[in-house]
Image (tube, rainbow, N blue to C red; front, side, top):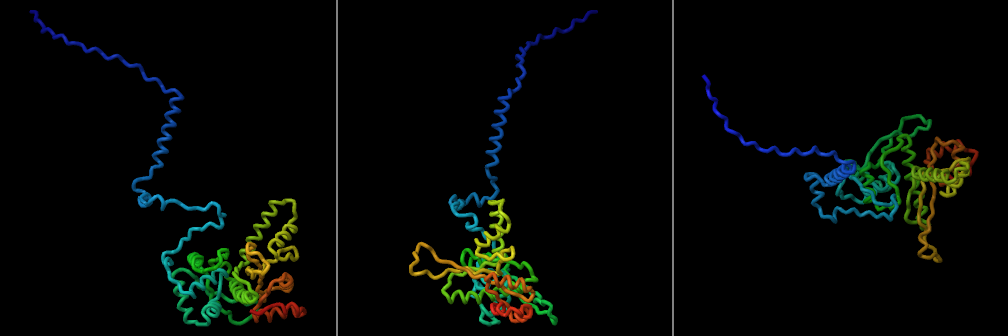
Length: 346
């Protein structure tokens, strides 16, 4: 028997949307344009500071963020930023304490005995109050070193020496009142030579008295460290400018430039040079500026050999020696009394 299947209702068909053509690959010019646009966008995003980064700097007024740099001044004369330890900021220093920082800074190392005699007028108690304070604030360093023996027997003497720290040098540059071109040193270089270096301070004070008696003012001290640096730079510059010139000729030219003697193929460099201004002459014009001069100092020790000692004396330096060193040197050059007469006693 046949069964009739139910008829299906006809379903309306939805017309199919026309298929779009596959996208074309971008041309090389379009790719280059998109790449440049992306890079520009990245640079713009990177230049925007982060919202949480250094907000205090962004909120400061514009005038306070501008840097004032005088490009007309040479690099070595532009003010440098000094970083001082927190415990040294805002210190109120007494006059003697400022003098300690100034004298120790320009001579690199000074003994406590000399400081007590020159700055504190032998008032030991006042110095013993000031030095611990400066040391506590991180401005000075106190070291005890062995004195030179130079072949002498007996017990080794001990010397207490003061040097500046880096913070002490920064404070001294602000409070010392020294000339701007005065170099200030920090730290100890050679402990074995510190006694000799400390004697330069006493010799310079004696020489300064002579300079001031003849009217010299505005005294500046150059130690051999600074002089050697200037001379080496001058020799290098001369060799670069005149490569065909011999080394002896170059050294002679540099020695003449620095008003130093050239003896036995070498430039004689003193332990210290004191530069000063001379009083103005009546016939000198004001716009010519002050007249300057200098005196060179050498501190002799018992370790000097006779030949070395004669070279220093022939160089025209003002030579000094302690009483004990003079006794030893006299035995070495007993045949040259005129040489010993030129050695001044510390």
